[in-house]
Image (cartoon, rainbow, N blue to C red):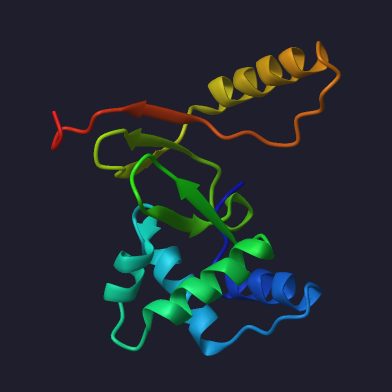
Length: 148
C-alpha cells in the first residue's frame, strides 16, 4: 500500500477516532504529524522533544488513545522504552531491524516478490494449525553499529 497524503492521513485518523467516540484534538493531530514526518519509530521522550508544546503526560495519554483506535502502532523492544509509529494502513507496509542492545529501530521494506512469498509461507504454516493470518510483522533482531 502506498503512503497516504497528509490530508488523507488526517481524514483516516479522524475517522478511526470518531468510530470509537474520540475527537481529533490538536494534540493528537500534532502527534500524527510528528510520527508522519519521523524517519523511524520514536520513543515518548523523542516525541516530546520534537515540539515545545507537547507535555509528556499528554503525549503518553494521547498515544494510548491513538494506539487503541488503530492509528498508531507501539513497538516494544528489550529496553525500557516503547517506540511509536503510524499504523501500516496509514503508511507503507514495512518491517523493522531492532538493536537488542540499545533498542534503536530502523525500518526496511522487502521486494514485492519476497513479501508475497513471505505471506504465502505464513498462510501455509498457519493453515496447518487451523489459524488464519490477517497481517504480518517481521522484526530482525541484532546489534547496531553504535553498539558493536
